[in-house]
Length: 201
Image (tube, rainbow, N blue to C red; front, side):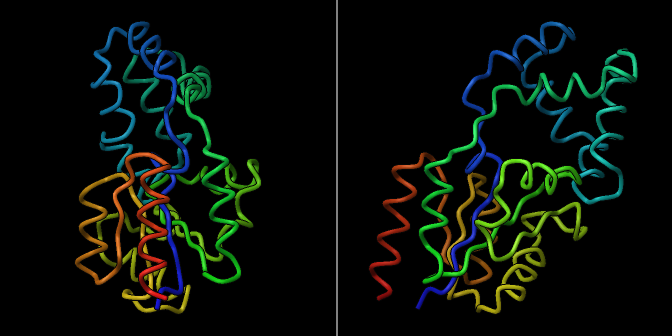
């Protein structure tokens, strides 16, 4: 029996629907688009921020320095980079509709400013448990971050479904014994979720 449904945030609930702001930023900085993404999400300072070893602000300050921009521009650079991101309110409403029949959770590889964002967007109440990598010092696909979420939800792996857009993260959840769905779009994800939930009745 399924007792809990867990979601990733970036690439699932919060998606980059408009790439123009990032493309403009890359051009302004003289970077290839893919290189901009790599430096923001997969540079040494990004990984440290994801583990909670430095703040998001410190990561952006490091990027500003690397891009030869004034330190006071760091916040603007961050705003510009994320300007095309859109929260999927329909998917959030679906998550809320799962309760109280199912427990809900969020597992996100994210920096220390995510909690503030969740409060600002009034998302905290959609989840019984929120596990943010920067707060726990673990990042997906490390099995321990999934185990931590499951322990906090008080469910077994086979009693939980996890939705993520990253194949390695989905595979790690499956290897732990969870049901896992790779997010491609809202319609397909909801169809797959409903199929599992109906099949486990």
